Amino acid sequence: MTSGPKRCAMSDAAGRTLWEWRVGLRYIRARTSNRFVSFISSISMLGVALGVAVLIVVLSVMNGFESELRSRILSMTSHGSVLGYESGLADWAEARDRVEANPRVLGAAPFVEGEGLLLHAGRSSGVMVRGILPAEEDKVSGISGNLVSGALTDLRPGGYGIVLGSALARELGLSLGDRAVLAISQGVVTPAGLVPRMRRFTVAGIFEAGMYEFDRGFAFVHVEDAAKLFGLGDRVSGLKLSVTDLFEAPEVVREAARAVGGPLYVTDWTRQHANFFRSIQLTKRMMFTILLLVVAVAAFNIVSTLVMVVKGKQGDIAILRTMGATPGAIMRVFIVQGSLIGILGTLGGLALGVLIATNIETLVHGLERLANTQFLAPDVYFMSDLPAEVQPADLAKICGTAVVLSIVSTLYPAWRAARTQPAEALRHE
Image 1 (tube, rainbow, N blue to C red):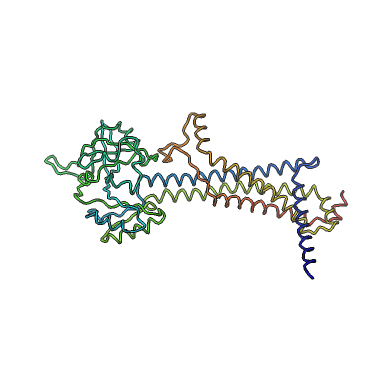
Image 2 (cartoon, rainbow, N blue to C red):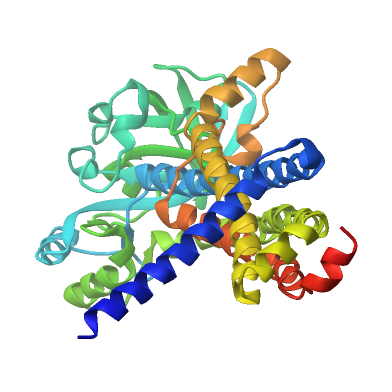
């Protein structure tokens, strides 16, 4: 008995909603009497689109920079490390077996690490020396994939070969097969006094990680040669680990240390390069907040647009009111109009931002060739490319915020329209 009235009520509600949308959409389109208002609407829509696009591009570049930085760091280092206390780690083979028994550990490899001074042809440069076991290094890092000449297998025990970064090799004028002297701070007592411990090494390979910090400051030698140079004997500095989930590295490294036992130091990629990633996250939040103001300014331009529309449509509003339209319906008409401006601008900005972000490297390289300059100096920004990574979560956050700001900006003009008195408006027509 009540299904008929309910259907009628639903039909009436749907009809009211439909005409509110139709009127709101009609007010956006240009007509002879309101082309200026339509132009302002277009400008507001364009402003929202540009603000959203810029925000998408900037956050995508920040995401790409973080992802590229992380991948380049992890291509040269491990997910985590377990280091021996003071004198190094003895019986590393047994410790490696215990660590690799953990199902969350993909592999472990020994290493020796220390600082040195590389000298060649009257030039010198400080360098971080890392002794590795070539046969097992691929389990924990991607150094071999970054080699531009030579091979890790050319590092043989007693051969005193060295693999240098490309920037370091250029700095010292070294190429494959050249010989250089590596000196460390540990001294040797001689009749002439205390002199630094030195050894002549042959360049066995050159790598290029694409990150200036590594290409300029790292050198790799065989783990046995490094142990002899730093006076560790049969010991190593520690074990490098590769884990199944890099974001679980802090927890897995502690588990590995407990499995080895004894006094140990533990570290992981999140600690070693924490400042890099903290600064990126901080910059990303600041850029989002600052650029969101651009979107907000464009969104609140809708206020002026709707105020002019309300002023010019006083007669229409009065007629709608006399035909039975409620103040709430009038308010919804202008909310629809302003919201459509914001939604269309947001969709346009979404398309433009994604298009630019996915082609940013091509655009940057084209501008560099056109201007005959390099925008990203590798010694300052750690990389020479401008990567971008579009993340759906960022798109949702940006577009959602832009739409909300657009809707909020419609409330005041819509409220003023709803307060229009029919008799007062028609008296001036």
